[in-house]
Length: 89
Image (tube, rainbow, N blue to C red; front, top):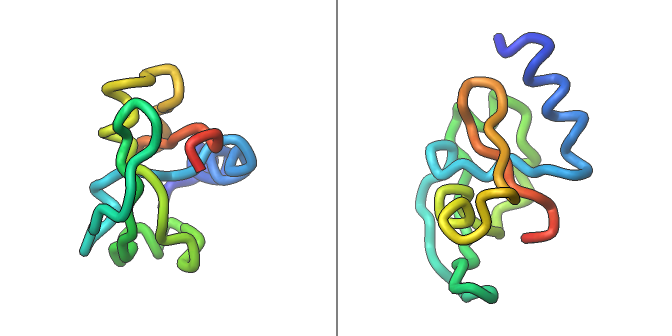
């Protein structure tokens, strides 16, 4: 479905993590990082699971929030979904 672009993005997962709010549901804020970036727990949507996300990783940040305080830490990947630098995890 996503072709070479998404496979390449998955190879980058050592550096970037898929963190787009559009692929998450039942999001709950559980803490706050520096600069006010929230820490959240969530469940992945069915679309995210089809894309191959790690179903066990359900705690972290929301890309749409990180981009407001640290735009360089966010990268747009295949399908327009947002990835966040691993430094936020």
